[in-house]
Length: 110
Length: 110
Image 1 (cartoon, rainbow over the protein chains, first blue to last red):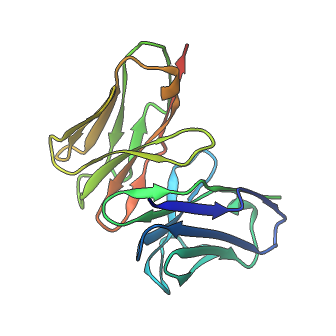
Image 2 (image 1 turned 60 degrees about the vertical axis):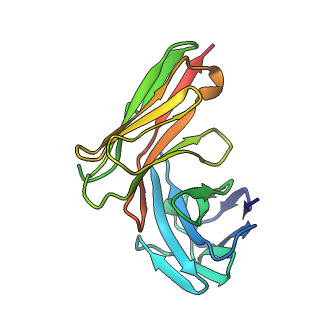
């Protein structure tokens, strides 16, 4: 069966610090991978999606970036965090119609 | 409608009551409509995927209907139980992207 891992589960970072969130999927090959963010009081917003290694599409202009160095690994990064980057970050995968979500990372930028 | 909208934003019902909530979405570029249940401290769990106008899906006490022409979907819960307490998300799927609503937060009071 397929599983998706995200880490860390929670993170508190100062403004201006770098960020790296990792997502890995097991039990499937060549999945589509997604990064979503839920800011306080808002719905899930798609940040990036990837259909293959090295292929990243960005949906929202921001100071975040994503990379897919391996088939089942998706990384969300920032060089300098902003206060507005605080939120709940979810990674998801799909092969077919349904997306399956990871456990998420709660990021607080102070 | 430009965005995916869900109503009500929150709902409190007594155990045993039946309830329903609404997801409204733009009817253009429609591929599928997804419902997810998101419990606190867990990742969103897929409930239904619906693609055809008039579709009805059922899983236990939960069911959903779809009207693609007018752009809405209803989620029904019959005989609510405390374990049904969660945020229910709908997502419009254009075939390329998911667009999520902000969710309906359901609290079932024992």
